[in-house]
Image (cartoon, rainbow, N blue to C red; front, side, top):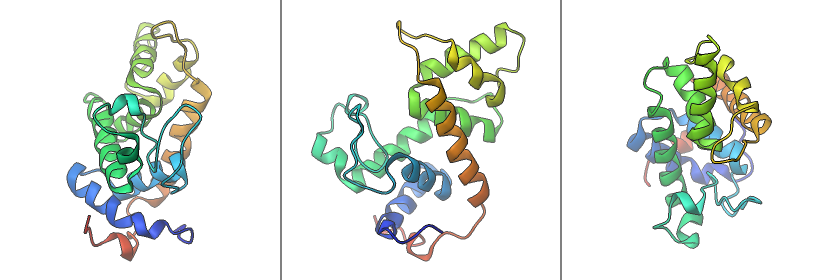
Length: 178
């Protein structure tokens, strides 16, 4: 699909993560694409590291060097993404993915708070489209999320994922050797 920047070398890591988590290949691909643009040395301004932009505080048992290792990063990131999606048990599968992406990006606390606000207002708390606007007004621990960034994150990954899922996986991603 978007090959050309050396990302093919990471396809076996994505395939191995798919086998461990049962997440869709294109979903993991899309998160890496959005988070780091397939740059394994990427570091965000807030300290997120590697291909899947892992926060060291989320993985305290791992050193910075080990979090930057592409194999560890994709393994841990995909497992964390799967956990973020699995927590949304009452939502339809596609909605669970959207809620999971938002949780992966900004933390589940904000998403849960927005979901509660939506329910209290009589909205459908199981619909990401109805819950997402609530991110603008929620607070957790005295902090407010970067709601626009969270909403855009979910929208961009979802749009790309929805267009790709069901498509053939690049040949370099078919053999999970990692």
